[in-house]
Amino acid sequence: GIQVEQSPPDLILQEGANSTLRCNFSDSVNNLQWFHQNPWGQLINLFYIPSGTKQNGRLSATTVATERYSLLYISSSQTTDSGVYFCAVSSGGYQKVTFGTGTKLQVIP
Amino acid sequence: DVKVTQSSRYLVKRTGEKVFLECVQDMDHENMFWYRQDPGLGLRLIYFSYDVKMKEKGDIPEGYSVSREKKERFSLILESASTNQTSMYLCASSHGTNTEAFFGQGTRLTVV
Image 1 (cartoon, rainbow over the protein chains, first blue to last red):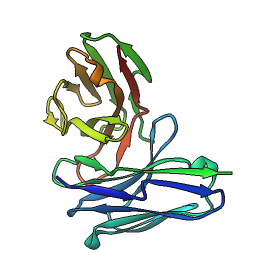
Image 2 (cartoon, rainbow over the protein chains, first blue to last red; image 1 turned 90 degrees about the vertical axis):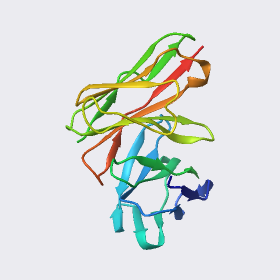
Image 3 (cartoon, rainbow over the protein chains, first blue to last red; image 1 turned 135 degrees about the horizontal axis):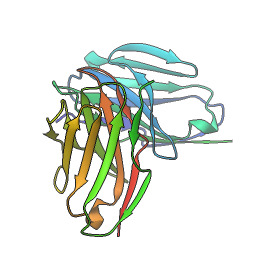
Image 4 (cartoon, chains in turn purple, cyan; image 1 turned 180 degrees about the vertical axis):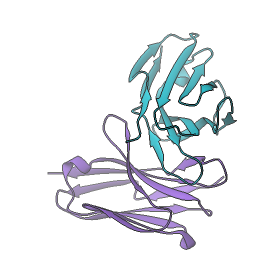
């Protein structure tokens, strides 16, 4: 099956700093999503981005499908950005979603 | 907004009990999924369904079964709960193919 790797696995930022999270995938995908898992465990949808670039406030994402990677940018980080960020992809006909390994982000004041 | 609701946030069950985890979505989505999440292992797909009464095994179906009698509801069944099924369970739904998936709030199950 498709492999999804995220880097870095852990990241500690000072509040106000910028960061880039990376997602590499091993095969062609039909779609790609970025999620933020909050401290209570819920997965919050950030971006649905099978290709191209999107922005939402301080967050933006870029997917280069031909090169099999996606990037999530967080600017001016806040303590509420802390949590785990997942990249998830699907391929094939039934929308089976495969998750990456996650990046655990801690933003300190 | 899409809403995916799981019946419980926290559950504690005894070894050997039959356990039902319920998930309901309100957006008429065809696809529904059950995942479990464990430290160091990430999210792993247990089962998914692409239509009423249809199901497909995911990556770790052993020890689980599912039921989808109505489009909006997808149930995960642990026939005889064991301690190694202590985990966070997450339900998701999506519409058709190549579309965004939405998750419920998760159920933390502890089997003692």
